Every structure is written in structure tokens, then in C-alpha cells.
Amino acid sequence: MGSDHADVFHPYFFLRLKIGGVVTANEIKHVLLWCVGLNYLVLLIWAGVFVFAHDWMFRLHSRWFRLSVETFDAIHYAGLAVYKIGILLLNLVPLVALCLVS
Image (cartoon, rainbow, N blue to C red; front, side, top):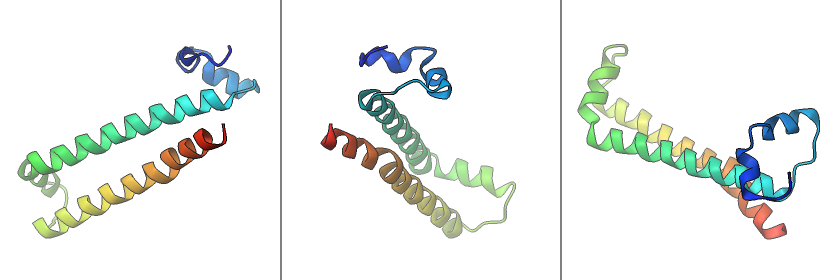
């Protein structure tokens, strides 16, 4: 396994990590890039459902919890913000740092 783009899709990529194989910075960059993309996709789906299906989400959650609409909105807004900050700090910043040093 070299520094091919397809290496991160190889079925034994993570097994190689576990066994103690050497992982290149390029392979880590590709994994982080996929993590950023997938996490932003989750964030966009969450935000889209929150905006376009707000009433349905509120009815669904109010079956289990007694929430006002304002509290429901605040919880989701805070959740979206924390999730976005997590993506930035845990995926995007390491990716940018690896791109800058390599």
C-alpha cells in the first residue's frame, strides 16, 4: 500500500492501523477529508430537516419530552453549533494542518 488515493478504501486499511503498519500523512489526509465531507453531510441533513420539517420534528420529540417550541429550537440550534464546532476542531483543523506541513 503506497500513497494511492484508493488505499483508504482498501478493506484492510484500518486493520493495518491496528496491527501497527505505517500510515502516511497522505492516507490520514484522505481519511480526514472523508470525515469532513460525511460530517458536513450529516450537519446539512439535520439543518435541512430542522428548517423544512420543523413541525414534524417538534411533534415527534414532544411525544417523549415536554418542550416548548422555543426550547426545542434552542436545543437544536445549540446542537447544530456544537456539532459544527466539533467538525471544525476535530476534522478540518487537523486536515488543514497536515496539508500545510506536507
